[in-house]
Length: 139
Image (cartoon, rainbow, N blue to C red; front, side):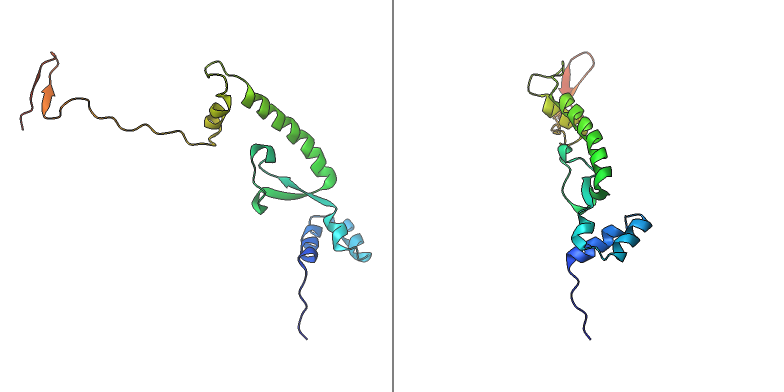
């Protein structure tokens, strides 16, 4: 007999149930809870905060129980607010409006522009002496 396709929702519920305490997982299995009920017990938490431009990719998301996630989100909100205040603060050594650019340099979000190499500024076929005189180079 050929196996049926296991829907992705059922696979997700099975994976998430492994994060639950053993007693709670056994109780849900005993009553044969629906996959949607198990999935509904979790929320996805951003490891790199979404406010800090954290991507919505699997490697940046951690499933957490709703109560734990909401408690952590309260702390994350205050962190995000402080970063925003610092980002918008006009720093004394920057022109107004450049605080965001400066923040990007500090955090490494953008690479600094490299300076081009400069030439020596004088003819390389000549030699400059310490007394200031310039003579043709002897080769």
